Image (cartoon, rainbow, N blue to C red; front, side, top):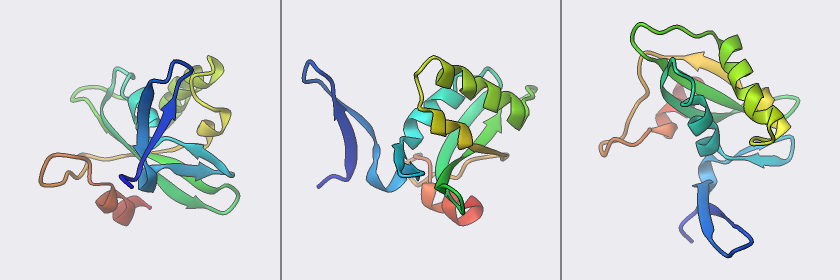
Length: 126
């Protein structure tokens, strides 16, 4: 009823992975927007990352990462894809995450309580 998506590990611990409305369905497989955001944030040039689903003719939906770079730092979409590929190769992210696209922004819109406003992002980028 909370619209949270979670997984239970073999020990019975529960980990919330995303909100139902933010999960991205790539070719019939579910992909967590929050997990992708966390991985993009490990790149040294990335200050902020927000991932939304974007319609795609082939896959149904693909991840679109909206990235804000740190002041004085540079990164290309190709570099960020290579960064993500390392996590895919190590099995930390499913292979269909490679379908991600990257868009750069000066800022990511926030709600009145400081959370990422994914509704505004979908209106701008989706």
